[in-house]
Amino acid sequence: MRINIEIKPGIHWVGAVDWNVRDFHGYSTKKGTTYNAYLAIDDKVTLFDTVKGSFKNDLLHCIYKVIDPSKIDYLVINHVEPDHSGSVVEMVDLIKPEKIFCSARGKKALLDHYHKEDWPYEVVSTGQEISLGKRTVQFIETRMLHWPDSMFSYLKEDALLISSDAFGQHWATSERFNDEVDTGELMAHATKYYANILLPYSGLIQKLIADVGKLGLKLDMIAPDHGLIWRKDPLQIVQAYDVWSKQIPKRKALVIYDSMWNSTQTMAKAITDGLVESGIHTQLLDLRCNHRSDVMTEVLDAKAVILGSSTLNNGMLPKMADMVCYMKGLRPASKIGAAFGSYGWSGESVKLLNAALEDMKMKIAHPGVSLQFVPRHEDLKKCVDLGRQIAVAINEEVKAG
Ligand SMILES: Cc1cc2nc3c(=O)[nH]c(=O)nc-3n(C[C@H](O)[C@H](O)[C@H](O)COP(=O)(O)O)c2cc1C
Image 1 (cartoon, rainbow, N blue to C red):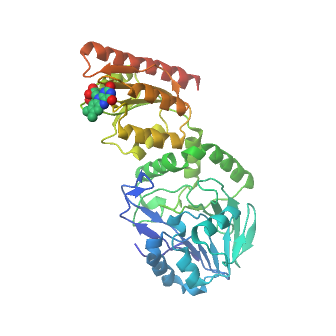
Image 2: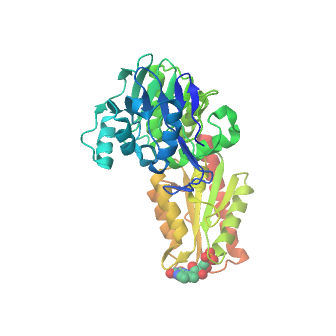
Image 3: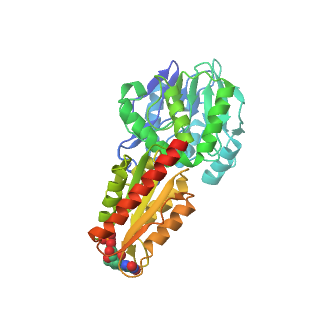
């Protein structure tokens, strides 16, 4: 879509919709994404962020519908990741901006990416304001949300928060506002985005929500750099971030596994039986059918993470190694863990999975079940028992709060 939308009088969405992207640094974007940029027409015409390099013409097309790009005075770079700054070199050449506003870390990141020493950088910090004419922009640094350079731009008179990657979703749509799409699907995309991008920074999000509360900003609209703009009840996404960042678990367990010849899968089903008969909401997630980023979305509010893999060449199966590596980086908190798997002779996988659970600071609530080759009916009772014991631990911990 290459149609600019006036999101507030004099403020235009001039971004790009990427219908085709399916992998975003390891995150599966099944329904694409958008790269949002915003243009404020004022005494100082200001462009907030750009788009991924390959979408530069879409950005230009939208801008030309409003104004000649050479009339842009200011460029604000809220985040230097290439999906937002990838077209900045060509845009700066074209616009020749009077000033480029960014955080101190943003200037460093721009220099480290594009090596342009002679650009007219203007470093800003939290609370600093600039006037565009009728409008005032206040900057709020959001360091490590989710890069060191990240910041928000708050347009005071419009009560509009341009929130960079925070509050975004990877979802390509022809609509631009939250009230134009299905809320359930929107929140599902926002949840996945949080679980896969912002989860490790949950502590900082709690602090940011408190700090922004202290600033007393009126929020009429929240415009992230990906996905839909929060026009109707914008605080709903702030409230959702408050809940997600507290990582309050549900009575929910995930049995995540990979299996070559289905022995570990048979064990996974028996463990699930033990959990389900104990009244725990459980999801059985075969890594050959579920993408790591969808699994992570389920991890967000689960209390127990039970990992299963058979032994392959003295290790765990590669899809499980991938899952464990990805999950560890996202630092889910306050989980219970357990491991299981079938083996043929040396049987290392359960030991390795337990080590991975410990590494992720999960509380190991059962020593694990390791079975040789195809499980007998009697063997599977150990798996059902594992499920039951995890259910007891979930009930105790969730009750204890
Ligand atoms: C290529 C290959 C390598 C294997 N390497 C090991 C190994 O190093 N140690 C071991 O205990 N079992 C090993 N096994 C045996 C499997 O772990 C065993 O067949 C197990 O029951 C498979 O469980 P699954 O059906 O859940 O994958 C290997 C199997 C295959 C096919």
